[in-house]
Image (cartoon, rainbow, N blue to C red; front, top):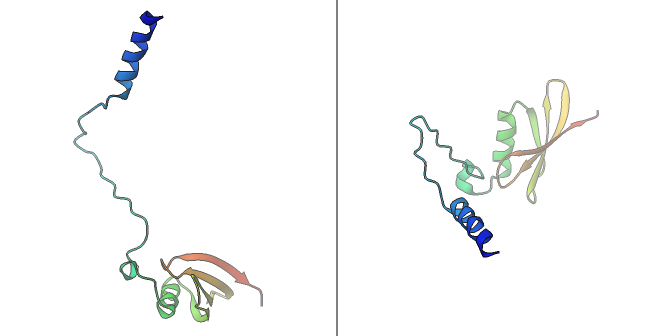
Length: 101
């Protein structure tokens, strides 16, 4: 039984050791980060959220609820009315729902 243990141990040692390979000359470095650079990491104000939504193509944007983690706005795009939910911490649109009128 001891004879069969050495090859398995050697194989495990080879697989566990890091393999250093030179990076190709045309390697691409990707920097991935979570969050947003908007407002230097601070939460946005209700007015800033309204401006962000207007910059996304909505018009006649009205503030409905700016309490809590999600801000709610109503706005128009084309001939349709929408309710837009915006994250107060990141400034990203969380949800868009069409309103029936």
